[in-house]
Image 1 (tube, rainbow, N blue to C red):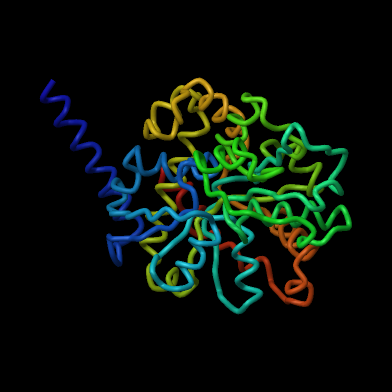
Image 2: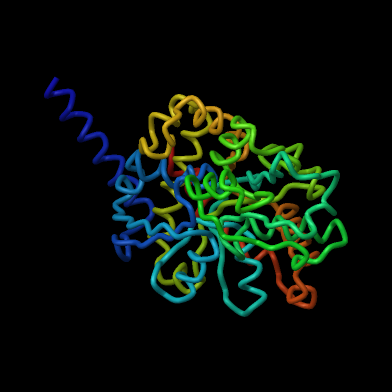
Length: 338
């Protein structure tokens, strides 16, 4: 047994050394990564990469800072307190429109994975009924908020026609709905499956599937990505390759992972005391994860069209969306990671 353990350790060392040799010496090993709601299944690839040791395999020591929502992690990146972010792809477009060159390097989610639920005792016959509602989102300005803005704009409403309340993730989100603090919720798994099974909400918009995503956006709509400043990419290309390798390996793992595998891999507190329900949420989320790590041109355009629909600041912005995604690293990862 000791010989087998030694051989396994040597094999793992060789894999790390081989990957490092292929991508060059790391410019640094300590990386600070921001995320807004790490326990959400939207960010499952991050948790798997961490729990499975895929970052360490690449020679990286990744410190994860968990914020109340994606908008907060973006603020931390712009402020310089973190190096990279796992967050919504649309932030790259919004920031480039403001003169901040933020770029994604790998797609983690190919569908938003966001669903909108309305409290069962509230009348809802269509999106126009959101007018006057208090809508819970992970954090103001985050992807859950942006999706609601798009829904409102499509119904001929202004984002200001509803009140958006930041309710954080998981337990705080569940509490906000159960205490009657909000009328509707735009959120992610496992929150939606918990509320659905508890009979708290009716799901009225669902982008956890390709069908639901196309029904709302008329096409694909990339979701979670790994993004950072272009200057950081330029200064640390080998670090970016190592990070991308780790996430690419995660996407390959997720392709064959069962809900049971996922529940066994995440920290126990993520299960919120109900493993079976978490596995249901994982099953519901699984189609949303990226298969290739690459964002296609149609997905970039779809996201830009969504933002322009409700954000006056972007209507006159000249963003070349092709510059929002740097595919060099994920294409190389496909060659390196087996």
